[in-house]
Length: 121
Ligand code: HEC
Image (cartoon, helix red, strand yellow):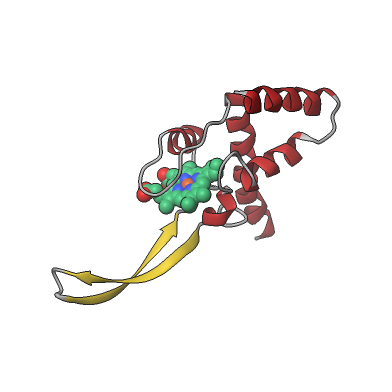
């Protein structure tokens, strides 16, 4: 609880004094939210990334097969899909507790990577 109070104090301070810009704050949310950073699994630009390769026994094929665990691309989603996945995730995606404002900042930040890609073409 104290941590939360401290955080909202800091949050207010940061925005009141323009100490960091919204983009910088969003970047911080992406790489260092209150939990493990999104970039660790989804890649620096939300392009999706390989988390691990492993081998497993496939019962149907009756043999050991190569398999891999991937975090999907997240820079091309609509806001509601994005928000739903972060608020009530499935699979191995962790749960995050972000305010609505933080969610919007984070979403805009991630979606921007996609715009960059289009511009490069
Ligand atoms: C431990 C690795 C990991 C971390 C950290 C992580 N994710 Fe995920 N995320 C996943 C995996 C794996 C899935 C696929 C879930 C499934 O369907 O099984 C996923 C799914 C998603 C989806 C849904 C994609 C879709 O196409 O529906 C979104 C959006 C998402 N993550 C956003 C985020 C954001 C934003 C963060 C940081 C706040 C984050 N993730 C952190 C592993 C991770």
